[in-house]
Length: 127
Image (tube, rainbow, N blue to C red; front, side, top):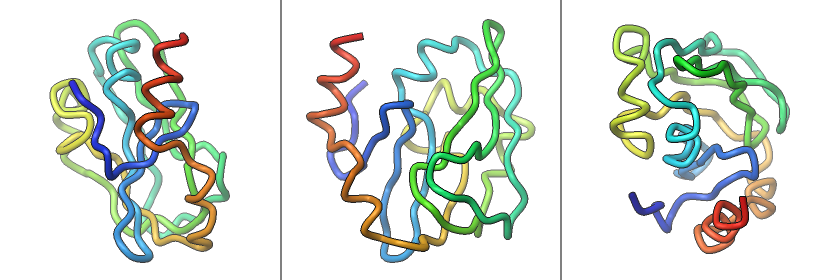
């Protein structure tokens, strides 16, 4: 699976799709592949504020439980409630329907330090 060129990425394998002062966040195809079959997702409540690097929630698979980190500071304005009943969507469509949350961004300049697609692909090639 290719990585969307318009997304930004973290070294912890989250992706972020910027849209004005909002950002959709999920985990990358690489992350879901390493986790295996996702069986449960714990997401924050709408209205919860986070700093960059804070734990947003967890993704649990048959192999492990992994924290998901906020790639950017802000407040949760939407969660993907479909994942409660269909967490496996993260495996089948990690960069689309498997998104986790939408954050209203506090400081848009924070996104400048995230990886572009070329830097992210280089990172996972070195792992």
